[in-house]
Length: 361
Image (cartoon, rainbow, N blue to C red; front, side, top):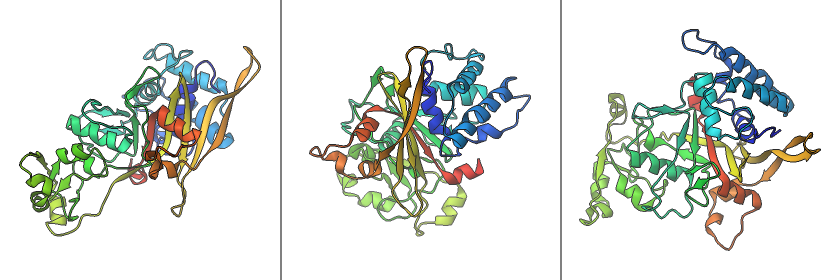
């Protein structure tokens, strides 16, 4: 209900637990006496019974339930001002999952680092990205840092290049409805973008030249040598050899086509504008039907003045997928509806899931 600056927390909880079960592992793990804090069971019970159960059964969570969770998190002393101050969603996620519930990080990097939220950041002076999407930004972020993902995350939370209400690198960011992370995984078989066989090289210059995640940059040696850009002596493209486990090279050899893309699906976006956080939910439909979008605002209306209360609201956000996946955004003569404008300009956290990975973790 947006009580005492809780909109950041309301929008984040709504994104995490309303329509997906990818975060449900934190609700059911039993306390490890050696690993977990003494308050573990109390916080877990409050989150499960007072927040998630109410949200899923009654589609409504009272303000006092959220206050109780904030009180418990505030007692940990890790983040000052949890009771009444406005915080960033990633602060709340890290406090809840990392410190309070000690959940194994969803994102594991080749640098031996792990995190629950991955910050996207690129050098805007180096690239002319007028309308970047999160897939391109993810590839650029990891390529520039020389990093890979060591496993397919069941959940991937991406923070766009901005910091709360104070700073944002791009005026608009398109939340990709699907991320192909095949080329970002350390030991995953990767496809030559020309012939479809097992790739042996990756060319970062090819990707950076086109600045599009859809522009593949993995080649077998033969196709790389035959590529016209690589034959140009002025291009001077540098390559990195791809190392695979023995079972991968044995399975695919040199002639077998590689067809095993790893994809993450968008299910929620938390947005911010003038210190107020809201949430867009994306509900995938069966039989390849267009996804449905919902919009949640915990402070959509109010009853009374100082002694009153906020009235949360969920509304139909319309057909957003056709805008995100089509070419209409690049047509300056076509004006997107208000919901799409808000999503692009205020996009802050994008939540993705991989159902297959979630089954095993």
